[in-house]
Length: 285
Image (cartoon, rainbow, N blue to C red; front, side):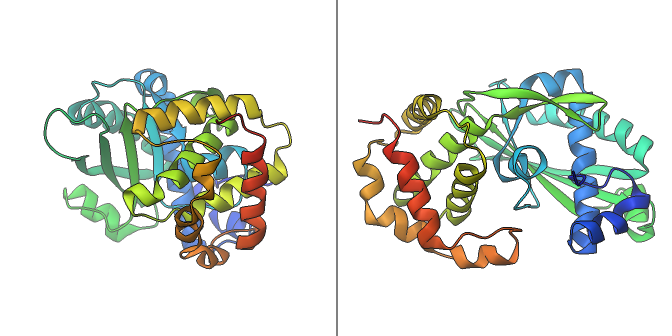
């Protein structure tokens, strides 16, 4: 089995060649893997953060489509920017020292701003510099922002219905959303497209790939998780909701652009049929 990310600076180029990925992507992948390792090594962060989204699929369950950002849900609803700065900063410093990476938390934005918000996301910008990146290492040493950045999104109050502990680099374990949880989250996001006026083409491709490659998915759990996640966001769920033409129309927007980043691409019509076949097996009404 191919390694899902380079585990040392010395094998980045070999990893890129073996996985047919651009060298710059392999460097980012090394930094991403180091950040996951840092979070897993922190007793506090590894307890409250659950890795989710497209990169949770790509790093753990289904290598196919990498994104630059790392997405997490926090089970600690009182998480603050100071908590993130303290615990993540310390974990990144320790892990970076062992791997030869300089890290710097450059910005933490709370969105939406202001008090009394239920669904909050901390958008964290982590600058990094590998050993051979002297320019960015100098910038970090001076306290300036690195031009090489990994974004991290940490969501509060999102229902986490299923997660598993997964070993990262054989050293520590990280909480990762299960395949059933990720499918339910992506189904909810697709239904929410007309409400938020945003398109989620990547979610359709991810769901279709999961249906094809994970025959063990649990339809009872997916339906239960979808109801919980949709209820939290006030999104109506039913079989008829997926008949809304806006759902498929918005999912089609920019869908073909995924050919450029996905290792395996499923044409839109095929992917939509996979999704409808899945939905037909869910108890939703």
